[in-house]
Image (cartoon, rainbow, N blue to C red; front, side, top):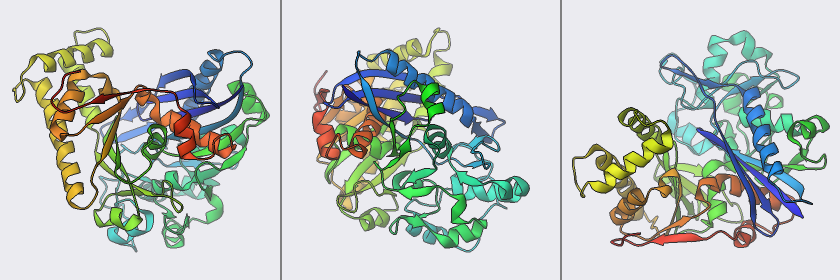
Length: 441
């Protein structure tokens, strides 16, 4: 039986799914992400440790697989926007700098001179965030010049993982958007930005479309992961457009609400200019043949809720039990209550409503909403959000693993097991709950 593995490299967890070619989810697995927090500003992580966690997830999926399964391909998607320098052998020259790291953002002396934030936005497709790789790399160049000059490969953690798996350096156009060095429309590295960093394109990974086969797994990686030596390694996408593929958010009018470390709205749009006119994050998604994607974010909402729940219900022995108490407290409180648990949920729902209303006035009307992420497991939170938005919300039972499922679909497209995103989604056998405003669950 032909199968596919999709991996979602999340900020809080690495998730994986084993998917059959006929759309059945055969196994799921997750492992927590291990961040290294050094003082108030520094957030890093070890790429070799990330690879070990990836191997653990893959081996666990294979152990749960039915007999006579053959993995045809594996693809990676996830939260990116981190900088990593590597030597000639592909070994890291230090930890990867996480997108939440604030050392470059808080340093007024770090500024890639020569282009305005507006110019950078039009080139790369994302507003100029000082915490992302363009500025991270500028910080490394100024503060660790010898290390920066010695780097044979400049990329992100996912670049390293692909190289560990298949011995080749590659980056898809969606993921490259978060790297801030790609001309998003021309789909190539933007030379003036490379010149600012004194970088030659030979020190950067090869740019390719999502669902492209980068190579086959190496013999060494096959031993480390348990995968067969002919497994194809396929390029994925940024986490939200990957999740959109898994839940069928593929056309204008569809909206994905992805609720994780940040709460995100992902909209397929007919063209890139509509996204730029609203100063939103742009993603190549299914272009040039299909729609672009546009993204708005409520940054770090999930982290703030997690911290509140950890502190408020610290007497409970596990985070699962703390979240259960959090949901129970919000459930007991009436609408508009001053109860802090209910207030947090209602405040986030109002912020989401405000964002979506503004986009509707700009011509991005939501006709169909699909919600994924941990909050979908909370009956009270999903009910509050449905009532606040005044729209039906679909809750796929596979929502917690949507990013990994999207990666598996791209692995299937790369190996021709699926004809395209619509074919991949149509084969999934997962069901969904539909919530309507004003009704109980």
